[in-house]
Amino acid sequence: MRVYHVYIDDLRFTFVDRGPVEDLKERVVEASRANGAFVSISHSSRPPSEVFVTSQTKVRIETATLPREPADTGQGDEDDAFWFDFDSLG
Image (cartoon, rainbow, N blue to C red):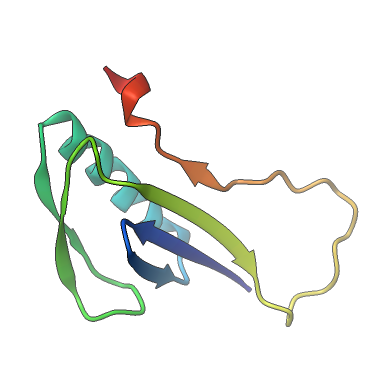
């Protein structure tokens, strides 16, 4: 089972589905390009909330596999950890 940890500044949100994470990534990029905006977060380990995101906000998304899954099959899963580099968006 895969889980996704999203770190926004000092807050951590954990998701069990990739869809909400992809949606959140899009909204975070939009907010950073718009000189800041509130981004709502739902479907995570925390109660639904909003965070203010600017181009200075530190965001990291990590993927973790819970031990219940079988060991690596050697098929070379690529690392899909995601870093935002807002300086390069300009």
